[in-house]
Length: 108
Image 1 (tube, rainbow, N blue to C red):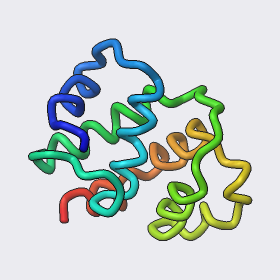
Image 2 (cartoon, rainbow, N blue to C red):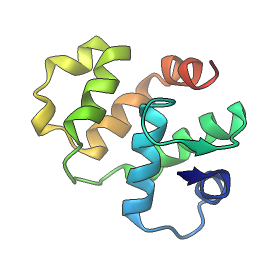
Image 3 (spheres, rainbow, N blue to C red):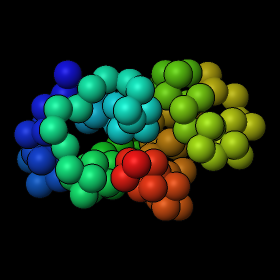
């Protein structure tokens, strides 16, 4: 369970371990199916996704295939790339290029 305070810390760019940012990113991309986020507002969800994407630029850790699949569901062009070769950085850049679909998904 991710607490809304963790989202708020990410939005403020407080010092946070990269693994925590990756966890929040996965939860946001798969929202609401992945890990529950306790009591977020829609604005906090979208701002946290934007902040997570910014923080993950340059993170070359492998993106879990389930997260890559979640991205491909909303943006099929992302699915044309081998999901086993995706990194957090490529996913974050992809979402940053056109965040509209993601913001709409988080606002449902």
